[in-house]
Amino acid sequence: LRLICTTTAVQRKNAGASGPEKYTEAFIKKQIEEFNLGKRHLANMMGEDPETFTQEDIDRAIAYLFPSGLFDKQARPLMKHPTEVFPEQRKIQWGEDGRPFHFLFYTGKQSYYSLMHETYEKFLNVQKHQDELIAQDLPLQKEKRNLAGSRWLTKIELEEMLVEKMSDDDYSRFIRLLEKLVALPCADLEEKYIQKFSKEVPAQLQKVLIEPLQYDERGVAFSTGEGRRKTASATAVVYDNGTGKITVNGIDILHYFPVLQDREQLLFPFQFLGRIGKHDMVCTVSGGGRSAQAGAIRLASAKALRSFVTEKEVEFMRQAGLLTVDPRVKERKKPGQEGPRRKFTWKKR
Amino acid sequence: DDKLLTEPLKHPDFFSVKELFTLKDLFDARVHLGHKKGCRHRFMEPYIFGCRLEQDIIDLDQTMQHLQLALNFTAHVAYRGGIILFVSRKRQFCHLVESTARACGEYAHTRFWQGGLFTNAHVQFGPGVRLPDLLIFLSTLNNVFEPHVAIRDAAKMNIPTIGVVDTNCNPCLITYPIPGNDDSPAAVELYCKLFRMTIIRAKDRRRQSEAVEELR
Image (cartoon, rainbow over all chains, first blue to last red):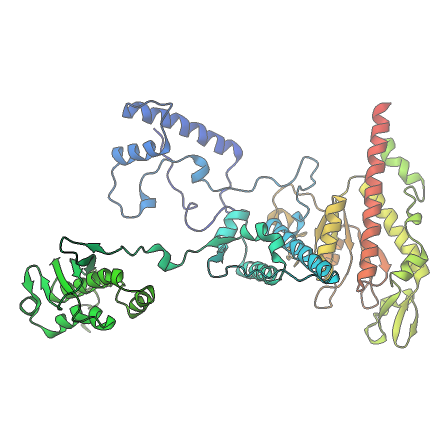
């Protein structure tokens, strides 16, 4: 069984253009043959059918045969098809008689400049179309493009698309040209071309589903929420038509949280929405300390209250920070230091 | 094969390049208009007809002769399958020049010129690269009004050059200079049209001659 280990070439940066390691076609072909042979051997070892051995089966088999506790997924043993492991590279750019294939070969950055050439051509087309419409006194179309929902490709994605390195200046020039093209009134003509370079960005709120209210046997509306803070996790059930009674793990809050600060944290979501005496709450919490538990219950109750409230108020809650999970956890101690930040006492001699 | 190559060299105008343009065409395309007297380059004085209200007028008779020599040379180079590179650093005509080159099946370079493109070609492109056999400048100056680096590089690498030289350009290192206007769109479109027609004509002639040879 031959494992193809990851080289430094396969990282987030695209190394496809010109690096010191150039893989010849013969080398890649040999790697593909070895990969297929190895796949069949692996299937035999695992006792499965070599013909129907998919990539997922390979991954599972490797994880079983070579268990690794390393945190970085890319550092673990890997067996993938060579086209995924070795990045795409440029083959020889000219034919037998020496004439290059691309008409912009002698510029050095042929893909980038041909892209600029094409985009400029679309720009001129749209301008010509606009002039024709103006000559015939027709109104120019003005359908507003949805600007908030899309973004342009990043520099790395563009480099991957063109298999060629480009500098930051080149990238910003290209984006400026695209913006100019999009700003024209009749840009809908080249909509398909523009979509090749834009990606959808769904707005944050659309992802989060707010659950509808549930009703228990007495007909009272209630809703549940979960929250975490440091090591504490809590679940809260908020009932409607209540008197403002709050129970934690079967104990009233006055007895469970003797400190005023924790009780304030619990009441904050209700106070923000102005619904202090209107809801009952029953929660369970475990783990963490007194402050962490209070924070966890606060998050859980805020999440539960989302179902009772309009979307605008949900947005207000989000902006107030009631719905954000607090990412602060205990920082680890580092070697050579006494704590996470405190260093050992410095002695002059 | 030898006959194919030596046959065109016996005639002074094998590709009948003179029919492609007339003096009137050059005048209508405003090729005779130069820059103001203050911008005049010393070496362009032989090519200037005169000066009217401080604007230089280029002598179109000389332009005709130079243009005919240049077009004849491009036709011969294209006939022998040479690589032709169109160079221009004018932003207005960048797209036009690139489209002309693409239409002919030749190459263009209208972008920023990297230092070692010709002199360091084996490192830039790879071993075994073939450099262009002819350079055509639609404008010899770059965006800072200095002579384009490619003129000097081509002279270093022994590559012949054809260039449209305006009254503020230096015609020294160019093998076939064409004194004429390089700023008006009409003039540049005329040059592109002429070069495109000669190259296509020469290539068609070559294909015909090869077909005739094969039939024998």
